[in-house]
Length: 300
Image (cartoon, rainbow, N blue to C red; front, side, top):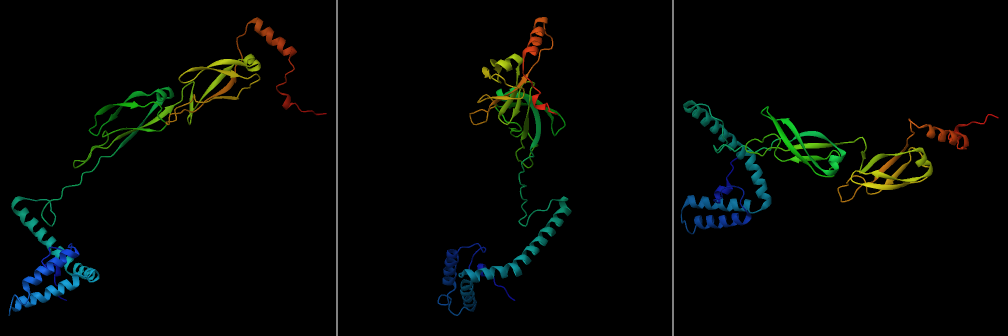
């Protein structure tokens, strides 16, 4: 089957032309090869027939799509293969005279390689809860791609959350073909101290009381992470009970704070004076308190 290049017949460069461009091209070609202008010119007459045939097919969107599919299936792929063979022949001939050369595209213009961003590098460091609360600077040393050690200074913002990452721009692996370097990501792991433990946005700590403070109730100073406050301890409080102080915990990232949660621990003196020993002995004699009453079983 003979395929005619309708786009070429209308004087168009390719099949990307719009409907208006096809219409304008048809008018120009029809005027140029019209029989009234080219009297008894058989070539012009055949040309005029092809122009009308091409316009009839291309001006209708459905027939145009069918034509494009048929053209690509039978002519377009064949031409592409032929062009590739020509490129290969030229490359082989060129290498005979000037040596091997990288193959170029069908237009013999080497495509510029795409710029690729470098990979990110991830690591982690540990910071104390106080350091995380107030913010601090840390230095870490990492081995670079060239094998040398490189030291980075990391600014840790106040109130950073546990496992949150600090990003150092373009301190990761280098990019290729002009692409920018990747980033260095440092995961922050907040470490509990001997005094404070971070649980969500709450800070937990122990509230140490003497036996008489727990029994009688009292007011005691409590050291929070950024202040000293006085709290009221009700009488008869027991070990393990908790006293919650709102708004004295860790920063929540929204301008607020969690709570300070204190857990009561009743401390018994180990080195007592003779007078203290006598007072405890007296208390033992007169007190009717039975801490193990719930465990006493009546066998009668």
